[in-house]
Image (cartoon, rainbow over all chains, first blue to last red; front, side, top):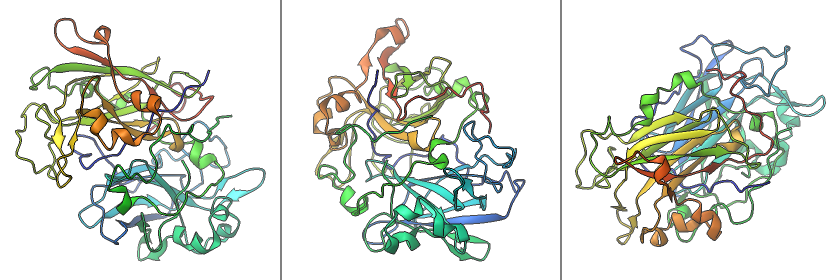
Length: 186
Length: 234
């Protein structure tokens, strides 16, 4: 028996009060790995800020392990101080900022690996569905062989690579318009 | 192996919708990139039941909130109709006057000191959740030509995978505003849209106290393995 998934609806402008958030994935600095910020702005077709958008991230720890039962591999140990999930609402300038660590490479199929990456999703008033993308890191050798990045038209791939800044990385999310962020099918 | 197929035709709103004018500002103009589903997508955040108090499922402050008391309850399942225990469900809504306790809601309507408007619950071993709340009021959308949102409750649901994460809205049966609502009507398939309307169900209400509404949720994915016993860690 197969039943159809429930339809998505917009986040609307009023998500926040009473529901907790954490933009710090490191447990106050206890997680293993290189601590960084991952920050950026969410903008619309006019490059105007999108405020009160919900940005969620999901990533592996520094060893490349997901805190999830479907990922069990002794070579990539769990970190009790890192569960890999964070969310934050954008501020009046459309800005968001997470404190996290650089993830390790995670397995693909066979002997292939995925480059270090952070899964990113955006919900917002004005969007009926979630927009799902990935942030990659500059200078990673595995970027050239990443199976998901390879699915993105070559000219748009640089849009998924965060930019290094002092202390972390910038990953801007342009929902529509010039240099529009590539999003993956849901 | 967990499987994730594309959504069945028409069961999800279009990315761009003429009905919902704001999508022209925000929704991508480029088609989605079709990429392989990997470990990164079939995993996702899990939430320990111990982290959520039972009290958080009562939005009425113990029955003090103004408005029509009601229970919203239902079951969360996957596309194989298998119940999903241990799923975090968050709810948020306007009060009985159609007012949100939020700085962006500038409308001159009263706040209720006993109603914050947000709560959460984790599904039980049968995938069931239950909120006690009040029926929200309708409210006008500013600068929209007098578009009124019908009474609705927002739900945010985390399945076991980043791919099954979803946010939806629950509508109320028989409300004439439903068919005038751009957001409700953005779902093309009639049956899929009707599934966003709760079912009047006195069996989930509180006898002589609160109305009951049933609302079941289906998350994307097949052949899901219940994860309650394993590794639900913060």
